[in-house]
Each structure stands twice: as C-alpha cells, then as structure tokens.
Image (tube, rainbow, N blue to C red; front, side, top):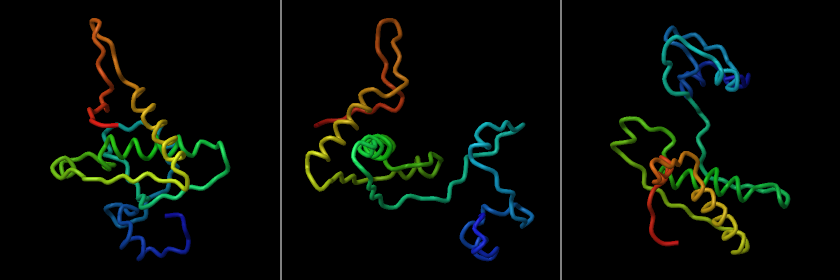
Length: 145
C-alpha cells in the first residue's frame, strides 16, 4: 500500500481491501498500533496480504533457526492443518497438508524435530482440574514418532 511504484489501478485489482466502500484508499496504520486499539464494534478478522509459499532460511550458527522453523512453522502447520483462517468455508473444506523436513545433514533435521516435539509437549493452556490434567486446546492425538 505504501509502495509508490504501485498504481491505484494495480492495487484495486490485486489488493481491493486497500480501498474502502467509497473507493477511497484507506489510511495506513502500523499493525503494532492496531493491536492495542479499541473499537466500539467488532471489525472482523485482520487482513494480511503476505501469503507464505515456500521457505528457505539461512543464517549463522546458533541464531535460533531450528527452533523458529520447528515451532513457528512446522508445529503451526501440523496443529492447524495448514489453515491460517478458521471460518465457515475452511471448516467445511479442511486442508490436507504434506510436511517435508530436510537439511543438508540429517542430524540437523532431527534436531529441529526434537525441538518441535518439545514445544508440542509443552503447549501452553493445559490445566489441572480436580487432579486431572487437561491438555492445551491446540493439542491433538497422534500415532508414531
């Protein structure tokens, strides 16, 4: 929206959510600012026009790449079946996903999956009620290892 190289015609065709019902360009507001704003009515879900397609991450050693990818990407994709929005359509048409985890050396893939499993085993939101432990709402059963 802020890129001056994009014409209004291009934005209307590719990103119609940039314009209001009167056809005027909306005012840009920082997402961090919007997170803390309060409104007198529900404005619906947030709009994000930055869909992820494929991911390749490179960086120096010990910068948290395996944990970020293992938990931030792999675990999220697995727990939510690739869905980023839950609405009537997505509930009626669930995603089927295939996750492939790989690295140049196999032990790096194993390292990422160990961290992914650790995060899964420690999902926030579990509660103990009357001596019985209830798992996180995002927990789901699985078989295998």
